[in-house]
Length: 441
Image 1 (tube, helix red, strand yellow):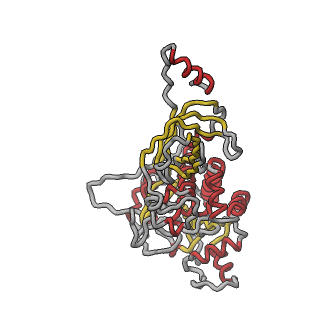
Image 2 (cartoon, rainbow, N blue to C red; image 1 turned 90 degrees about the vertical axis):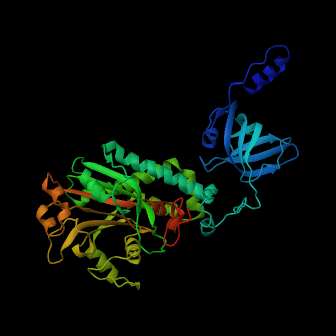
């Protein structure tokens, strides 16, 4: 590639000798362009959307972003470029030289040689305005456009990084990912869990997981529920204690979060700074402490002794509601807490009987986290044939042929993102939220 001086000499010599062709401009993402260590006039091409335009007498400044990073790339152009079409929101392709910037605000900038407007944008009609910080409630009205804002861009980059980190967490242990089925020749129903399929697979593979969309028809308008959401589910064979299962759950949370913090620091900081001040310290507090463990019975006693008045009166044998879950986390010093050994009557048939009459509990566990409440739910599974025979016949074949002790869990992915970013409403951490009476896209 030509440096600036070489290029000047080459242009001057064109009148007396055949002019050599430039090598094609290398296409770079904004992220890669900003990370260039030795920007010395390489010819590059960048494509993206204009985030700001500033025109001076002899020079034109653009900031272009392609979604690959929070920071935009500064483009410096000659004032001869027609700036009328270079509006906020317009899509452009810029070719030029990547050079070190004289400004302290950025390390590199792109000296434009060619700017092509790919798609015009009427800035006056565009629902988002330059330099205006729109509340999340306002952005929610435009699910097809809100991903172009800084805050949704950051949330979605964190979502992408967390997805990769979850797959990476399971991959080193040779865990098998169970694919979601798409085409059927028999009547089927949308599922709220892939657990039943995972239990089948755990009869051949000791560690399996799935990560995909699940569905629920709960008529809820709360900040924690969606009709369609993503779930991480795992099933582990030869697992005989809740302690071992909780180790995996805590490891998944901490490993994924540390990866996100390492790879998306600017995006996480934006959410912590502008959406949830103080969340950075709360998250560090969660990561540096071992998660706590209390029994369901202990949890009910804590709630009964609380000075707070609850909408739902806590009593043994009743479900824990969101208000109870959040109180328990506060009571435990804002450290995530595992609640274990729930009454058998509250849980599904497949959870392992603790044989602890007269209470009669099962080996179930929920992980409660600050700001959200329940994040994980799991259990040891009932692998003993004669126990299941009394409850449900459909599982019997899985238990008759080579049954082993096993357990598993599910983690609501959107709730995980709420937890680490401090986002109050679950509808703001998924690209296209679908919930009761609303399916815009």
